[in-house]
Amino acid sequence: MTRKIYIHCDGGFGNRFNSLVTGLLIAQAGQYDPIILWPMTNWCRSSFTTIFKTKHRIIQQDLSHFRGTANDYKFLSHGQFNIPSHIKVSHPSKFGSLGGVLNFIDMDNKDVVYNHDTIPEWASRERGLKKVVRGLEFTDDITSKANTFLEDHLAGLTGLHLRKTDFFGPHMANFDELESKVSTDKDTQYFICSD
Image 1 (cartoon, rainbow, N blue to C red):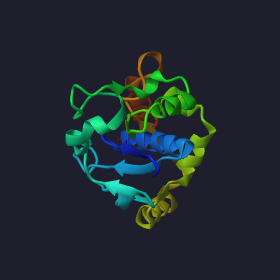
Image 2 (cartoon, helix red, strand yellow; image 1 turned 60 degrees about the vertical axis):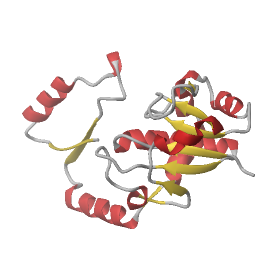
Image 3 (spheres, one colour; image 1 turned 180 degrees about the horizontal axis):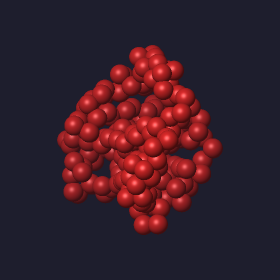
C-alpha cells in the first residue's frame, strides 16, 4: 500500500501555495500518495477546486482531521496548532535537504502530515519544485478572467506584489519607500497585489 502525505494548506493563498508545492515535491520524490487538506476560512474562502484543476483527493478540513488518530501520523509542521501536545512535531525547515526529509519520513511506516507556510530553503534548491509548480493548472474560469484582465490592462501596467510575512530583517521590503514611490510616480500605472 502506498504511503500517504496529507498536505495541509491554510492561511492566505500564498501560504497555502507554499505548503502545497513543497508537499507535492515531497510526495513526488518519495512516491507518496498526496491528499490535500484545504479548509475554507476567512483567509481564503475559495475551495481548492475553484482555483485548481486536480487529480488529487481534497479534504476541506483543517488539522483537527487528525485529532483522534494523531498517533498514527508523522507531523512535519511549523507549529503544533490542532495537533495534540503529546505528539512530536518536526519543523520542515530544520532539514538540510529533500533527502533528509525523505530519510526522516522513511524511518517508520506512518503516513505523513505536512504543513508549512513558507518554502524551506532546501526545497527552493530542488529542480523538481519548478516542475511541481508548472504542473499545477488553474481552472478555466480563473484562466479566462486572468487573460481578460491582461488583454484590458497589459500595456503600461506595472505589477507590485506585497507580502509582509515571508521576509524578515534586511530582506523585508521597505513599505514606506514603496508607498512613496507609487504615490509620487504619476507616469506609471501600478497594479498592487497582496494576499
